[in-house]
Length: 245
Image (tube, rainbow, N blue to C red; front, side, top):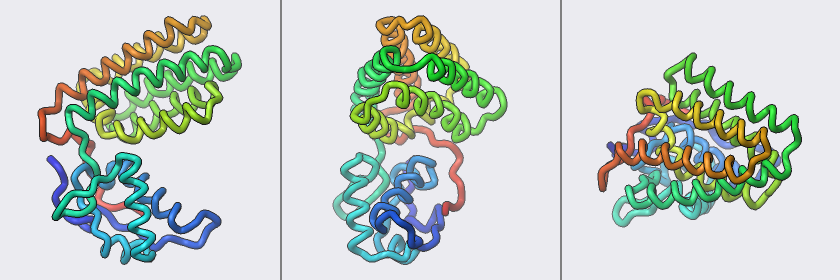
């Protein structure tokens, strides 16, 4: 279910420090990462006063950060409630996964065209790292982190800043759905098999096959994630940590 508590109910943060990046960007990055790590869960309120006190920044900075995260689809502004961590609906999930399937297929095609042999090998190794993490732990956060290494290599080899920005935006918005999918019994090992097939097609420099297998992988993940959703419900979440910094 959605988190109904105020922001202080689930995490703590220290004041933003003085570093090279503007304070506004630091606050955006801090809140974005807390959402992606599930330290701030879907439906959880983001109370301005508490954010100001915990982060040690101005009301203007907090409001600017929340506006930016709203534009990214990570925060929603609701009448009478204010800002909350966005909760994907079933319709949103369906659309996001279709966009993700199309986008990742294109990224894979660009990777086949542009990546070096060393990057192709690193991609294969990242799939095996994902497999090892799936065997080693049931912690969905750690499994997601291992799977994300696949995308780090993929984006690097695709060599497109435009595709990087688009994919990172979509990945952020489906993070909770990815966690729901990988929480399903046996799904991580099915995902490993699917990504191994993608990596093999890439190694053969078969762009059409690699793109098709990528889309099939995304749609398989979507089917699992959306099977857990009913209209108005929040997807399953990993166990919530008690604080963040």
